[in-house]
Length: 360
Image 1 (cartoon, rainbow, N blue to C red):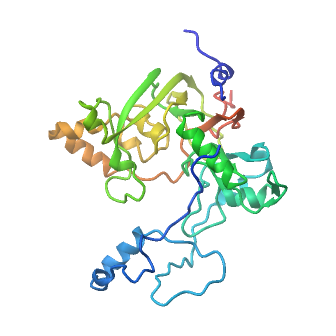
Image 2 (tube, rainbow, N blue to C red):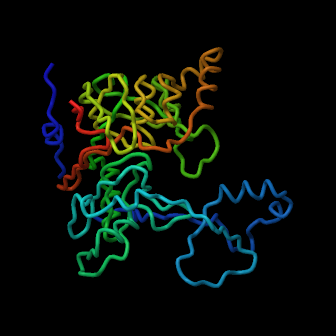
Image 3 (cartoon, rainbow, N blue to C red):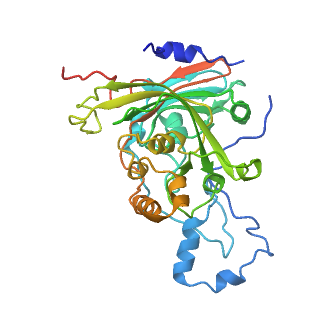
């Protein structure tokens, strides 16, 4: 069958201000903190284990300059911060686009987009500011540290957009709400992904910021909510699989992935909605999890509908969820291209190669 070329896919997109402030807040204090009315009676009665659990789940402001700390303030100190060696890989060769407002880089895998709680510097904004040289905004002012416009998972590589000022963040946020930001992903699986448009449903509570309970993976349903009232509790996830073709994974890839003798497939995916872990969760539920994705591989072909069915299916899914772990190595997913406001950027060759076995 005839398939679209990559350029034809990107050419299908056409991108035609002052939106809400989209400034990324790396952390925030709980509501009422520092207020005399803040309820501390229950906290005074908690034991050590409860205190540690509360500290782990709380979000904090990061102290960025010499400050006077009020008595009774809880502090979190990291004598051994988490390190990200991939920080050195975000160099000038990864700069895809720069104008008076936006910067787009090709993020290497295993480099976080946002700062880790223990490390403010080894992340996309920090490395762009440190490794890529001095940037100036429209007013000619030096940008100390660009602002993040969206997120890409730690284990995923590809296009990340940053802004030189808060206005750019607001514009990008507005374009996202209006679905004028177009994203193309490339994914590698060991099973072919069904072509066409796929619409799944994500339980709304699982996507809310700050939720720490429940499984670490996002669970989907393939069944449409039976009523509009029930649909309010669900978040719709839509993507289109444009191509899914056999490829040869480079056996000499830099991350030590051994493709063995198994057939691999590279899929080109257009996002219609952009939800947390959407591509990873949807491909796994379709029976084609992304290679090395230890968070979604164990629940291959499973959906929330199995839990609703109960019995052995629900027990099998519970056991599979217990095996889900966050990936500690790059997975076969790349944010390949992004288009918005007349700007187009495309990432370089992903870590698994261009689809041709280099040993042949």
